[in-house]
Amino acid sequence: MSPLTWAVAAVVTDGSGRLLLCRRSEGARRWGLPGGRLRHDESPADAAVRAVRAETGWAVELTDLVGLYRVTGPDASPPPAGRCGGRPDVLVHVFRAGPAGVEPPGEPAAGCLVEWCPSAALPGALTPTTRAAIADALAGRSGVLRRTAVADDSAAEPADGPLTPPGQRASGAVDSGRRGSPPGLTQRPG
Image (tube, rainbow, N blue to C red; front, top):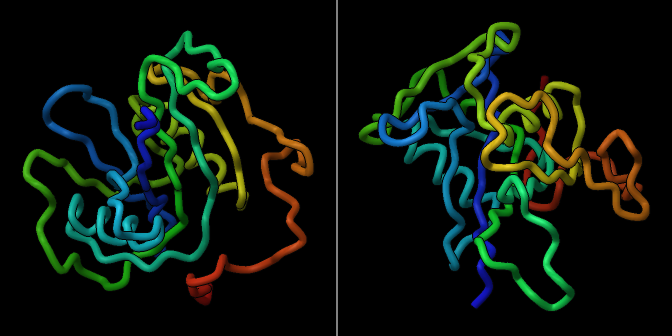
């Protein structure tokens, strides 16, 4: 079995440009994007809608995929070909989304503090993946591939910088020739 964990998150913005963030009361006191683990029986898009609602109480509509973010340990070097490495990595599908209504249809998960934050006044204690995904989403990027380190709380940019595979622009956006929403997602007017 592979030690890779699949997860989902969403950069949820409302009509005034505020971002939906959450902080768990146990463990780390950093703010993060709402989301959760991907279940075996669901697509990343379905998982993101389910996980955001379960964690925050908000129903959301996805507009597109911001990117894939690989979360690794701070000193993790790439394992040899065909090997997974010792510590599990997390691959997070981060979507851009907006609330599906004006009020949350449910309550946030127990132990989860939910807050709408202006993009110009974000909390300083953000996870590195959250910081990178918000920057990419607000810059309008899609198709981003990044690697971030777990233990680096203060970095403004991902620890290893953007991953730039062949065919990808240095800005982080994949140039696939396609424009618009990925299959299965609807574009919101705006």
